[in-house]
Amino acid sequence: MTVGHTHDAERGAILAALRPVVEGIAATFGPVCEVVLHDYRRPEHSVVAVAGSVTGRAVGGAMSEIGMRVLARGDEAADELNYITRTRTGKLLKSSTMPLRDSAGAVFGALCVNVDVTAVNQVHALLGTLAGLGDGTAEAPVTTFGNDIDSVVDALLDAHRIGPDRPWGGLDRAQRLDLFRSLDEHGVFAVRRAVEQVAGRLGISRASAYSYLSQARTATDPTPAGGPA
Image 1 (cartoon, helix red, strand yellow):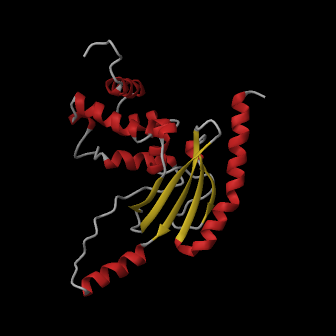
Image 2 (cartoon, rainbow, N blue to C red):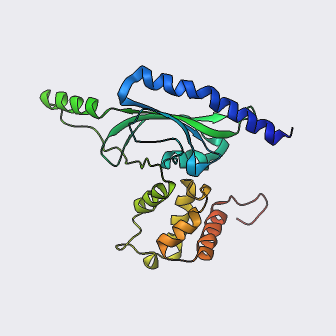
Image 3 (cartoon, one colour):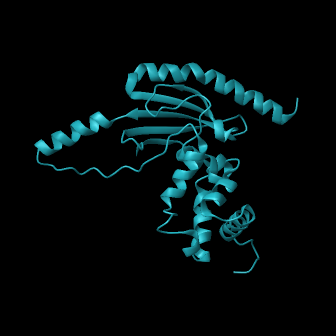
């Protein structure tokens, strides 16, 4: 058996061992909790187990922008614990994303926990108002949780405000490279067909999209030792 097949078997065993953990965590915290198990070897259908329905995820669904960010960081990805985000329907979530690694240290998936703290936040705000403390909470960023990876990619493009009010044709070269660099850093291009989808949204050819992506990556590469300053 080759090393690659050994690691694949190992990753499958880890995912299988975590399936009952997914159910156990969700059952412990009740209906406000959702636990999602991801296999990043299939970004477009990364959800392999889910318990709870906080974000409406289902087995076979796609990763969120957060998962894309972890995927983009590769083996350098670290646990992201107790961060606050908001769904597009307005639910306030306290979430944790914990990358899964094989024995070689390679990241291949993640275990994610989402807790709906909307009601807790509302009570906190009410008590703060009654105590005269005001509302000191910052607005949480919105995260797209969808079973369709295309909707997640579209949400990332929307976040860059590329549309009728800021068309692709109105961006200069530096802004276009910044856009592709940012999308790449968010893990968009780790998803199959993402280049074609981005090109379609921007109204450019696939060849142009690949060219801008290549230029953006070259611009972010560090200068080799002994190379020009």
